Length: 188
Image (tube, rainbow, N blue to C red; front, side):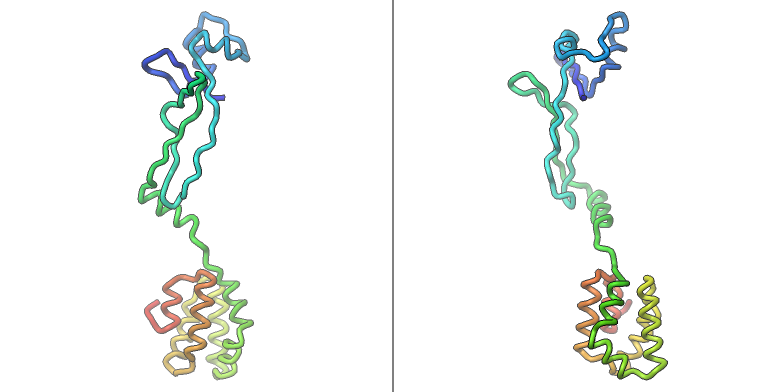
């Protein structure tokens, strides 16, 4: 339970029963004081109010320095909505960004007819290297895959349809933009 000490000009919030005992060492205060007991010391309970919902990408909610006194004399917790700082917005975005799912990407490639056609068209060592590279990409290191992919791009083996399938799958599974760029021959 939250309390406020309201003796006029400078209310004290948050205020606790322990603080009340410290402020009044010569007065016996009940272990569980009633609202009437507390009111004799100008101490009042503060009703908890849930904070308002905001878009955490752009805003934050802080408890107001003082609760609000209602017309019936009761007190309730108050909240202040403010713009998120650039650091808070950045931290939120980083914490809530979709994570790359290399494994699902690899599974999707393994079941793609366009990729099956690529493996059928690629000579043994190159196809094996691409497959091994894809396995390493599944572990989060796409460099070997991109190396073989670049060789296939240079050889003209990668069709526009295959390039579209790969790019769409890479984006669907939230792979890094540098990887998506490298699929079409851009800088990784």
